Amino acid sequence: MIPERTLQYIYELQFASKLLNINLLEGKGKRALDVGCGKGYGLLALKALGYDVYGYDINTDNVKFCKMLGFKNVCTFNLENGIPFKEDFHLITCFDVLEHVKSLEKALKNLLLANYKYLIITVPNLHTEFIRLMYLTIQKKTLPSFIKGRGFLLRDPDHVNMYGPYMWYCKVGRTLTYLNVKCSIKVSNYFMISLTPTLGKCIILRVPYIGSSTMIAVVRESCV
Image 1 (tube, rainbow, N blue to C red):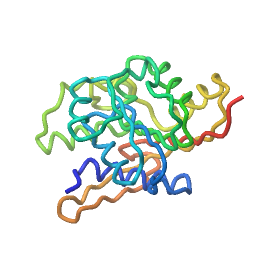
Image 2 (cartoon, helix red, strand yellow):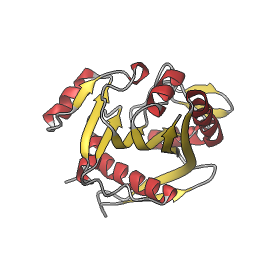
Image 3 (cartoon, rainbow, N blue to C red):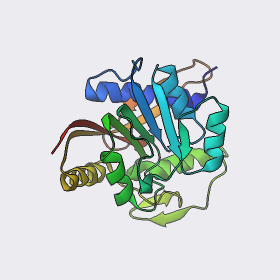
């Protein structure tokens, strides 16, 4: 049985495919890297799609867990220090990581300089994080202490980098210009409705402003 979070990652890659008008769901014969792989849900998603999977995470215990799942090309490393693999990747994913990093500038530079064709980044949407926190409160989930700030009601204190879609577009674009890396960028907000385990699937709605998450899709063209 596919874990619910793994299923959600697959649907996010389906959404990215539609956003870029390509097919990221066919990974056979291709290599993929999951940055900030956590306990392996993204790795499982990429493996299920046929990719030759690599991953790394800052948390040693998470990496040990991924190895217990059977993943060999995983290691402990910090995104702010770079990419620990020299291979070329058809796809790099970075699911819900950048909102946590201490140095966003370093993390973005390392991601955007990596060897990839497609880079898919997801982050929470600044404008609607209070909705997510209210939903989790209703679900009686364990939450960190709420704090106020920056024009909205509630913010997860662990989310140190929170921006709207336009600001993410600008930050990624400026970093690419600084690095002199030629890429195209597409940014979209979306809202995911999980229908698991009843129906075993998810629905993703593209919502311009109030989507709960933001996707930044980068297509590498060339380097000068």
